[in-house]
Image: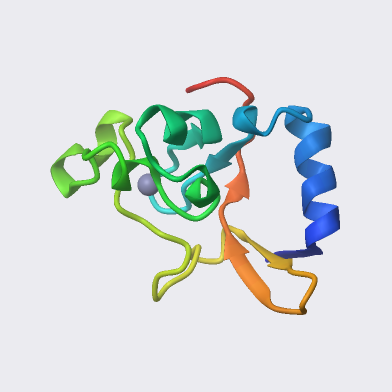
Length: 110
Ligand SMILES: [Zn+2]
């Protein structure tokens, strides 16, 4: 699993998606859905959770029978199974390692 410091992670995010953080996108390791931080804001959710939660947890679509319809699921990176080995470990300034979703490969909604 990719491990990087907070500064490296922020730099990669900026290089990939630009300095406007609402446009940053993350990929859910469980269902593969990609959501932007903006998507979280639009659903009235905390934008600081976009790198650790599937959008399905905030749009009410995170149920099993709907997870293949592009709405996301109820996965969270801080849960028991983390990111299933498909996320990243970001080392915070205090040395704490935080498991987060990987950056999405596409810049636009899929
Ligand atoms: Zn998901």
